[in-house]
Image 1 (cartoon, rainbow over the protein chains, first blue to last red):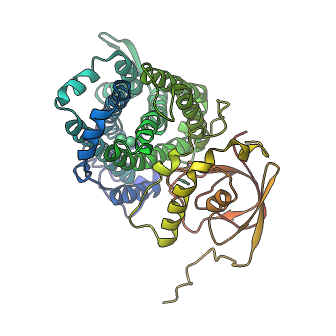
Image 2: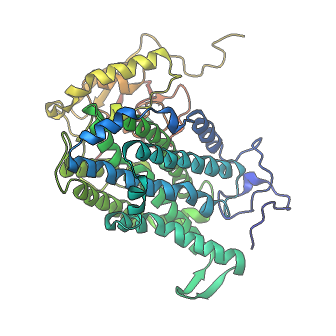
Image 3: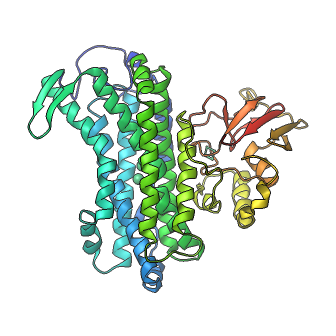
Length: 377
Length: 98
Ligand code: FES
Ligand SMILES: [Fe+2]
Ligand SMILES: [Fe+2]
């Protein structure tokens, strides 16, 4: 089967699965199989922002005053985020658009990818503002061992899926000898498995991998340093929260069988593999924290605390897709981060605005562990 | 146009419900979501968006009823609730990770 940009068949797209059904023809949203994706589109559009609106002139001064090991932490995180958003700004389009079958999901994928390009542009905005030679930083992304190690894990599932779909679209089903790759078997179950694992790895990318650098950015801002950067990271974190909900919906819809009964079987079969994707990513992020702090920690944050935070957040993300949690860390070692992560939506109702200011006031005393003594977390 | 015609979950202003969490018991009303009321009781609950779209505030609902004034964008697993937007409608028992 080959891809068509305008499928000429007549069919009811509400009867199609999310992926690997008919190619979408009319971009229509009057009837939807999964209306959640249009709601995500609307929300994402309401979040629209431009990096240039955030003033970074103080960040430049702050950056020059940071200690060397703190500059290392800051720049390394920026490089890693640049890598992640480079992948995310293109891959959902390249990997999922050729196989998507619902108009509302197709448009969500495009909207989602577009918002990632805003993130990428914001890194250039930050880097231009804090250093004289941005290319030194960007060039290092493809040569730095610690970053390239991670590039493989974040791109390999996408790449495998894209390769299989390319073969499927040109050759159809079967086993094909691909120079440099050996025999590649293409069948519907294999394609669906590759898709399911890819979505799991994207969920991990957006729901876990970003959070180490979020924590560092906000730890600087807690000391009133790099506050323009923190403002941008807040906007990025708000978008990522929506993206991770998108992939959670895809994974949960697939596993539930409500979308495509065959996919439910595949989801059940690869549960262990998906668990390992989460666990492996958590271990890599803990390693990353060690690399960040190799020359010294920062106030309020060190590799151990950050490692516990990774475990905690991984538990939350696993639970959200119906997996058993796998780490013993049962509470957030840096609860102050939530007040930074919370969306400052300008359109909040007065009552909600009160709630968030109330919280900012109380975050400091949330650290008291005695609060937890009376009950089991 | 009447403003109440489409409200499916009218808050009972006087209702007070018990929330059991381990050995603790917290009293809550139907006027605000569970999350703020737990926080006021000194209990840390994970959150991010506080608007129902990130699923970070997902908590196990062991028994009892909650309702949502608007349908959250986040997926709500069966047996769980989203604390940031759930209104408690009966006595309930909740739990964090096992
Ligand atoms: S805090 Fe985001 S869904 Fe509740
Ligand atoms: Fe992003
Ligand atoms: Fe994203």
